[in-house]
Image 1: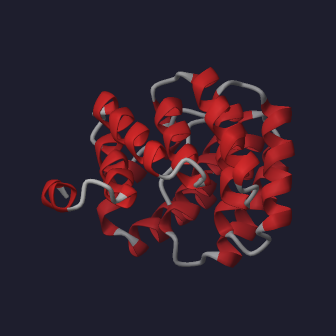
Image 2 (image 1 turned 60 degrees about the vertical axis):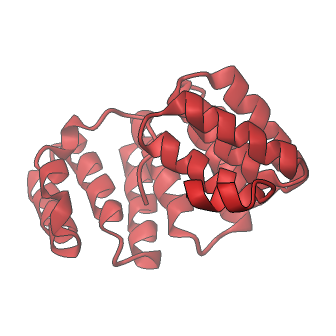
Image 3 (image 1 turned 180 degrees about the vertical axis):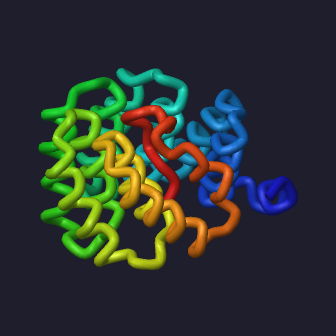
Length: 198
C-alpha cells in the first residue's frame, strides 16, 4: 500500500484502504490522517465519510462520528450509510434512534443480512429478545454461511438462558469458521452494543 501511494499520491482509494487497515490495527491517528486525505481528494464521496465515522466510533468520539454519518447520508442515503449510523446510535445508548435507522436501512436493503443482524443486536441491547431472535433468524435465512450470524444468535440465546440452542449455534459457527473457536468459547461475554465483524 505504501508503494501504491508513493506511485499515485492523488488516488483517494489508496488512502481509503490504508485508513481502514490502520483502524483495524488500532492505529487511529494514522487512520484519521488517511481519512482526511481521502476526503480532501474526493469530498463528494459518501463512503469516505462513513468510514471516518466508523473510526471515530471506534475511538468513542461519537459527536464527530455522527457529524460524518450525517454528511455521508446527505451525499448518498444508502442502506449501508444509514445502518452504520444506527450502530453508532446503539453504542451511544440511543436505541430508538438506532431502530429508526435500522428500519430505514432494511427498507433500502431488504435482502442484506447485515441489516437484520445489526437490528437484532440493538433489540438485544434493549432486552427485546424475541424481536432480536426474529431478526437473527432472518439474517441466517439471508446469510446461511456467515458464521457471525450464528455467533450473534448464540449470544442472544445465552442471555435468554437457552443453553442448548446457544450450543448448537456455537457449533455451527465453528463449523463455518474454525478460526472463531476461541471467540465462540464464551459468546455471552461479548460486550453489548458494539459493532460486529461481517
